[in-house]
Length: 499
Ligand SMILES: Cc1cc2nc3c(=O)[nH]c(=O)nc-3n(C[C@H](O)[C@H](O)[C@H](O)COP(=O)(O)OP(=O)(O)OC[C@H]3O[C@@H](n4cnc5c(N)ncnc54)[C@H](O)[C@@H]3O)c2cc1C
Figure (cartoon, rainbow, N blue to C red):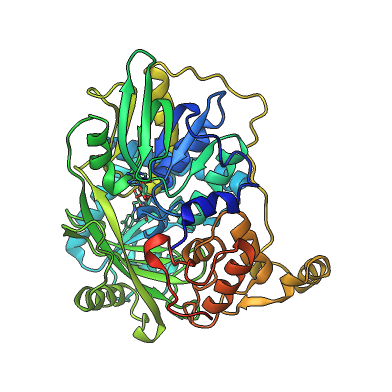
């Protein structure tokens, strides 16, 4: 079997700064490129330091950051004695500016909590007072009439609830891709397929040597551990604090865009002690998510869904939005929360020098992530990293046309420049060949990477009609052969015979 690792770097070596020579010294090395690592990288890209991101997967956002509810939370679920609550509130407020700069799908559609029994209104009141205490703008307690006015698809038995207008939805992987694109545009280096497996420290030089499973090495003055479910292992590699990250699984049903049950706002039940409950979520892309469950699992690779739990999800969803129908289900999936304790653990290590822990980033990690970037930047400054702003920092990424979002006249103009815009590869989500090629040229060369960048394979047919076309485009654009094309990296090759 040929070595895809080498191939990947050659394949997109025309991207700026992707392939610095091994052994170059960095000021900051970020381990793990989910939404935490990506926000930290982008924040550090504003300073005159050399930053590198090391990610074990074939692409960024392939960990917890790819499979979650995509909600920008409302700031009322947690008490502000917790760091996660404070970062959630600050992070949520940062999304409007990030949206303008980074062109990822985002909508403040508002969040409601629906109480279906009188005795749940006490908990609703508590959430309201917590929200007020946390400074949530516009939060209101709703009567039955008001909550039905806000969301007419709710169960008519609803007795009242809560409304937080600032809550919203994002496309989580597009958010991470845009952050990484912005960070790289501003000089950050990224190594994917770089599983950190060993580390050593030269105390005299004040440098960490960080080594990948396949023997590549980089050196860096500071290291940030934002490796999600595996932050405990990475901490051990660096001689940092001993802790144990547990995986808590969340299963979902995904409903087709055609469903008539799509609410206008995110609908929460009244939360339990263990989780925020199973929700009905109108995704920013037009589909509907129902879920997630919250079940501890011993296996950090256990992404399977189960009939029992999916049945409960549907029942629970229908309890809030009765028009939800099994006929609209197009797929199911699961995500794993990296659970440590009640709170995030973001601190400079007391055991390993120049090593910052960003661990236990469970929900609301996505919402909090822009504030995590800011917080970690300040922590690094506090332990001696000198940060001088770049005068030429550019916060914007390229805004790319999407076939499904533009007018037929605009599409005609694009086809005149490049006929690949006229070749519709994914009909469900209206994705052209030109967009698939763009994704590959941005470094997304697996089927999942292309899926998250373009939304191809995400519609009603779930890739049934377009997957083989995309495989052929990957082969043509990258030079990979049929047996090297994968779903999400090395272990997930697809084909047993040539197309
Ligand atoms: C079911 C579910 C629903 C959720 N819903 C929401 C929501 O609606 N709103 C919200 O705010 N939050 C939500 N969250 C939480 C949110 O998704 C997480 O907090 C966030 O994605 C964590 O990001 P991260 O970057 O810390 O971790 P990850 O995204 O897991 O990133 C860690 C990265 O580290 C890499 N890595 C691991 N080990 C190594 C190594 N040795 N070397 C190199 N790289 C390594 C991994 O491959 C991975 O890419 C939800 C989570 C789940 C599971």
